[in-house]
Amino acid sequence: MSKPIVEVRNLTKRFDDFTAVDDVSFDIQEGEILGLLGPNGAGKTTTIHMLLGLITPTSGTIHMFGLDLAQHRETILRQVNFSSTYISMPFSLTVEENLKVIARLYSLQNIQKRIDEIIEKLEMGDIQYKLTRKLSSGQMSRLTLAKAIMTEPKVLFLDEPTASLDPDIVNKIKIFLKEYQRTAGLSILYTSHNMREMEEMSNRIIFLQHGHIVAEGTSDQIIQRYGQRDLEEVFLKLARESKEK
Image 1 (cartoon, rainbow, N blue to C red):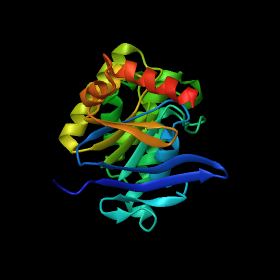
Image 2 (image 1 turned 135 degrees about the vertical axis):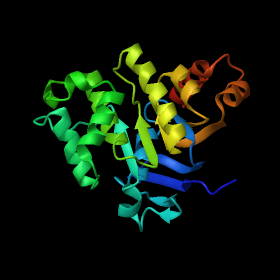
Image 3 (image 1 turned 30 degrees about the vertical axis):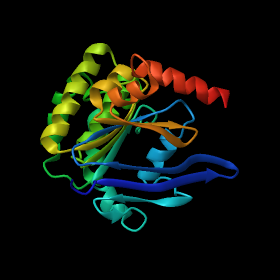
């Protein structure tokens, strides 16, 4: 097996007396979609923020492309991008203007052509010249996803990328992501509270609870391990156990 494109070893993050992520280790292979599951407060967002270099781990290491994130942050992050329903972009700019800013920050070539391609693929032509402050939550989700993929990253972190989207757009985005992942060899870390979506999208899944990995494997392996009918029942079982502790 080839060397993982993302390697996380013994990752821990403490905030004073609270441990948000506790000795977490996992890999992401090139071209793999790894699902990250867990109830609210399990440590998912903290983990992603450490992978993006937004917060510094208390201990542990993160390597991408064989490089240590702590020592090669800029080199690594030029090949990485992120989309989340919980981020915003400058409200005073139009959709196209926001994408142009991102393109220039990443020194992309043929900027207008690239923007037009992404606008078409994500069916955003009707909002291309719309002010960002006037976007609906679903339109904003599409903009943040467009921002993430237009830089042609090798690793993509997606935090609930289809939240607030109608079922038709969700289906089109899932098809687009799977095709883009296949043709570009893209590696993805994917979070969602839609269990069916996680089963459809993920090659493997890790389940966080109280900052620990409590389950890892394919969705079928995890379902079988916990003796449930589907991934949603596993999620409910573990989430309820989490609240009892």
